[in-house]
Image (cartoon, rainbow, N blue to C red):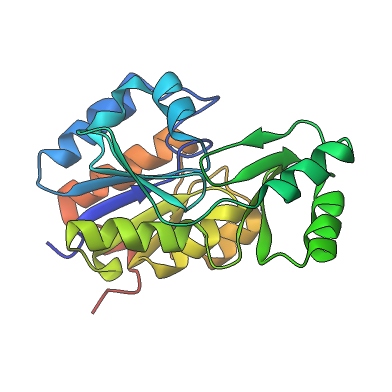
Length: 231
């Protein structure tokens, strides 16, 4: 096999409106039965993901909070890859009335247009943080952290090369991890900017697009899609 793993985003890719369809779950099971690894790469917190997607144990690894955590569903262990922003940063966001404000184990999240205030506070406090956008969501992480760095950590645990991975996503925060994969795929409902950089674009949206990729992986190792790893 050329591709040994599938790395997929959750919202807007694997899931539609937060829910994974039964047909998509069946496709994931079929792919896992081929011996390929499944990796979920999401901006959600682990506790939130487990709540909305109790079948998460089908995945070998979960990259959560947009990169700083690797979760092992089978053992429920979490590996924290980065330190969270300092309390002074969060206190200042609260003082300036930033709402909503969600705290993960590492990331801090809010919504647009709050990124203006967030960036101002980062600058004023001289913090080594950056802002990642995701279709209206605003996530704050250590400057070197994104979905690609989290995926690389997960792949290291599994002993896999990025070139052996098919990545699939739909939004701005998926760009980095799709770029590192052997084949980067955008679902039909993805942002135009992501479609422009992808090696392939599915005809189906969200879960239907993921099923399309899985069917091609099983039947032909995704050869018709090309990709960076193609000969």
